[in-house]
Image (tube, rainbow over all chains, first blue to last red; front, side, top):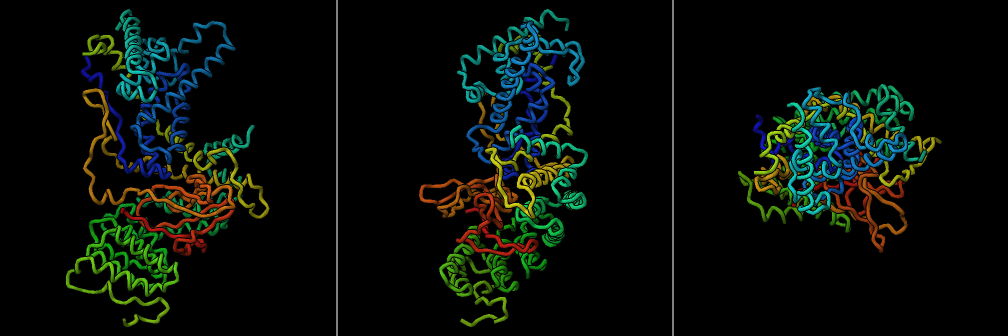
Length: 193
Length: 221
Length: 203
């Protein structure tokens, strides 16, 4: 069994403040370093958040474009990662809303709208049966619970930080994470490991 | 389609087309110019040189409506000076040092020897500010040899970057008010060296009178 | 012990969900090109009205500028993936208590000396509608540092600038490059044009 500590998952290579300062000046090399440091994590988050995981790469690109344009005004009032994932979360939520509107125009099956499409998602890196089961189960968790679950348990943000990022009080955040955990456990306990 | 989205479409078409050179051809710069500029940037990067100064020069050239030919020559000149600066500031100059060295070498009269002199006086610290002051003194018609002596002497006396910058600002303010550069520099140098430690060997190079580039020679106090 | 730690099924699910996708260099390249191109474009969506050159339309000239920037970024990226910028410790990381605080990393004096320093530029101009500062420190990009106007016609902006000597100018109403009357000037050795000079150092 894995002994990965649950509350402090492995972080991507971080930034030093000089790289950030240079990126704020428009230094494309420094910005490239930022993209390299966080791209995979952002794709991981976006694939788990989006109703259509195929849009993950586009969503991550949109996020970094917004971030780069806003960088000169970034005043480091919050941790850089928190700011990045705040933007990414906003992008994903907006995309999901647009996807839902479009999907509801093309299908009357509301259950299908909620479900994450395509088990044979070509972007999926793992065709392991357990992997698919986990992702299916997560996709069935309501978006507002799923996002907090991902930010806290997968990306490692504290409740305090997530409160700042989302505006949702910590007590409500903990409830959402618990509901997501309960739902995942219930779904996956029935699956063959 | 809005105007902005049309531009962004052009951008993305340009960025993703087979060869970003295509977008420059569309804009009339010419495929050859685009290829040449990209080669210059690539070559500099491949040899480990900072490319920001080259890209900055190209952007400035575009902004100032310089001809494509002139922009290419400018970009190549920057690349050449970057290489010279790296050699002069050896061993192991930082990208910031190399950029500052390139900037200084761009001022007529500043030589590799001047860069080497500053480097050897300050082997373990960034040299962007001392080289910046050196370059600006020479650009203001202080003889290069004299400007180098001033800067290296101040470094040897332990002048901080802040003090070097302040010296430049004070001289500039004086000149703005109509004071002659020589007079201002003489006075301000004396003021600064008075609060600094004497250099090893007791040389008074920094506080000696300054002459002008035109060949009038140093003036006796 | 948290709820998640107690449950073996959940632990395995988290292990699965934490797996990172493989690094996708092509996707990262597209990100950087798109971001850099977007940075050159006016932030507020309004066109930058440059004087037409030899009768060309303004729009095409702006496309040239944007496309030029994206092309250079595109070509620069080829080697960018092989030359990594040094990365050090993260700006902050979670602590056992669940909060995050910045890691205090010992910074050497040379490192500190190289850090960008905020500098304020001020220009008096009562007639202009828009002024931005352009220079070596922001790749002469008019969209990078727009200035803010006070009621007395004083325009200002504060931007971080790395130590050293920089040439700059003010872009007035997107069409006119103006020197700083309070700064020394110098001639650009390659373009033959005049610019204002600033030398920045740590205070």
